[in-house]
Structures are given as structure tokens and as C-alpha cells.
Image 1 (cartoon, helix red, strand yellow):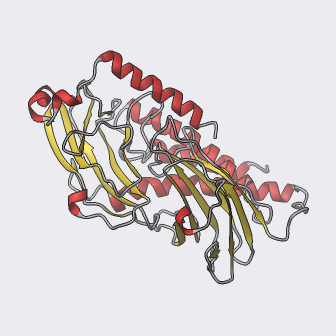
Image 2: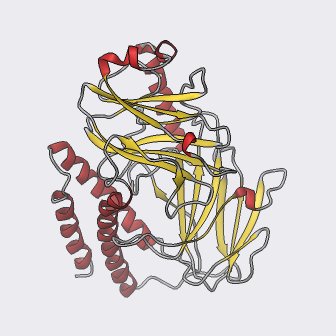
Image 3: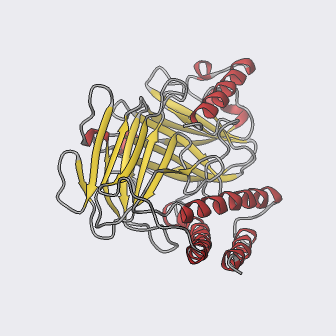
Length: 388
């Protein structure tokens, strides 16, 4: 049967989820099975969108196809490449905080992160007065609007990052292989379909195994309820730094994370993630905040409260029932390296003592009506952004 390899991969994938070491309750399992559904969808899309001679950008990650501690503030797109071909990318710059490009030499695997062969943001090429641009990727030398595809180049990733969900608008981007205009890929055959089903099954298992192992490399060996100093993001963009950690909190505990608002980072965002290494539900719950969404205290610092119980403050990040999880702060489009003093300080306190422990508590407070308005605006902005 043509679909048999994929069916076998599905059965193995469900076993990976149900036997994951962190599954401790029904919520963990239900979320894992939901994560599995998104991974199935993403793997099928990647297998069917593998077209290097007539490429187009597809959405890599979204609310229903999460992976790799996806950033709620980012629209992710990807396309596959040949390292011996020339590609033309045209577009129109939106008003988002950051637009970046990255060429990878392969897929993530349970034992390694793919090498980033090229990574840059839109400051590296010319954009006209109307916001339009054209850049090229190919095997030849690099230039102002031309970027070299090194040996093994396999995938181009584009990230469009929002800091203010309500006012920033996305741009437009498309890709073509130079010289292939007016042509068409060969007709679909049964053999091609069989290959795609097989590839989708392999991608499915690889993604699940990789991102269950990934946190061990970068998170779980850190002391719990701490965050690292800012550091260049491993395997990431050249102008991105991050601070990471993992938490384990009782329902009557709160984590206060204090971090300076960085004037040298057009984008700065803080998010929570589940032990499936994906973002917590962010459309209807405030599980992430950017610097533009957060309330900044009079001393120029942002103080976030991570807790299960509602602390009644604007910068509450909701745990949504997750006793354990991941923490990540990102700074993007930087023009300098960050120092330890740019990073976060972490304190664990009883929720009931927040009025005494949280600096500028009176400045941080919100009423129930104000909180409801924050969530309503979040829902509307998410719905509008996901149409992009």
C-alpha cells in the first residue's frame, strides 16, 4: 500500500508522544497528542512543498504547526533550495520590527543542529522608497544585494517579527529560480507520491525526536528557576541574542523576571513554553510579551510575573496549568553584543507577597476590566496577523 510507510511512522510517532519522559498527567498527554497533530500537518506540508526548481514560500510554523519553541511574535516562512542554482527573491518591506533571512545546510536531527551558512536582516540589502526590494541567492560571489549559496545549502528561512501586534503590518515576499520562468515541474506520478509519503514519515519522526532532545542541549542542564546571561542564539541569526531557562513553580509561587528595556534592540520579547518545546497558547492567554506590549517601570526596567494565580499586574505571564516549562527572552536586530547587565534577574516569591516584593507594584497593577481589554486586543491582533 502506497501510504503504508507513513502509517507505520504515525504509529511510531504516537508511541514517542505517549512514552515521553515528561508526561506526568492527562494534560501533558493531551497536549502531546495535539502537538502530534500539528507535526503531522507540518511534515506533510514539507514533503509536498519540496520543489527546488519552482519554489515558493510556505508558512513553516503557526498556531497549529508549532515546533522548536516557536516565537508567538514571528511569522516563519521557508523554501527549499539547490546549491547550484540562482534564485531571485522579491518583496515589499512591511512595518514589522525585523525581517531576516537564513540559509541552512540541512534539517534538524536528534544529534545536531543544521549549520547556518548565511544569516542577515534587511539592513544588508537595498530597499527603495516604496519598500520594494530584490535580492539574489546563488553559487557565485556575494555582493550588496547578492548572497552566496555555499555547498550543501538546502533551505531558506524567512522570519518577520512583530513587536507591536496591533499597528505593525507584514510585507510581501516571493521567490523564483532564475531561468525557470514560464516552465513547470514534471507531472505527478505514483512513484513521486510514494516517495513523498515516505519522506513525510521520516520528517515526522525526526521532528519529534529532535525537539524532545533539543532542550537537554540548551535548557535542562541549567539550574531550575534561573535564566542565563544574554548569549548569541545557537544556530540562529547573527543579530539575535537570547536568555533561556526552565521553571518549576507551585501554584502559590511567582517568578519575578526583571530585565532592562534595551534601546539597542528593535525587538525584545519574553515567552513561556511547554515541555513539548513549543509556545504556550498565546492567542487567548498572555503567555508572551514584547517590549511594546509590556509595561516598563519608571527605572527603565520591565518586571514580568510568571505564575498560575492572577497577580493583578499588567506583565503577568500565565502558566496556564503548566507547573514546569521553558523561559526565553529574545533580542533581535541588534547593533551591538549584549552584556550580562542587559540580561534578566530572577526571584521566586509567594504570590501573596508580591505587593511587598515587586518593585513599582502600584505602577504595575491592572483592574479586571483592563486585563480583559488586554486579552481582547490580543485575540484581535492574533486573528489579523495569522491571515498574513
